[in-house]
Image 1 (cartoon, rainbow, N blue to C red):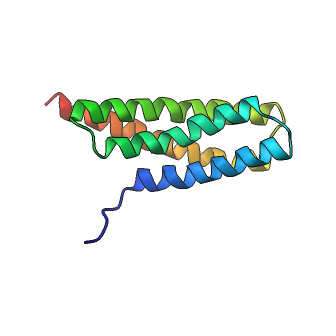
Image 2: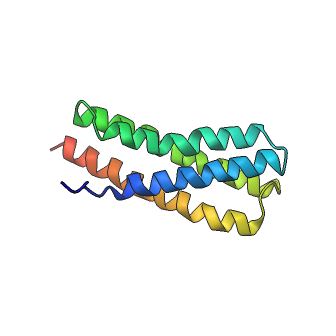
Image 3: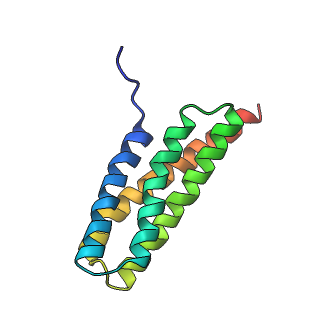
Length: 121
């Protein structure tokens, strides 16, 4: 049996791997530990919450997981902007990863909106 494709899960997993790489870079090369830890926490939580949502106990539980994932994705955009504006990451590095965070954020906004509409029917 072929595994069902889950685009938001796949994207969030690949994004988490990039966040881990950025965390390693920030801690080893830039000696930055506070902002990078926040980024690591929120950047890897997105996929974990989406994964939890795959086996939610109800649609309301699923919605809750997606809402928390959305908040984490939104937080990631904050940390990336802060790291860029404080020159811990270059404009090139920022432009390489930020669009991925925005794409995941938009997907989660859509999932939350659609799920809310379906719950109210």
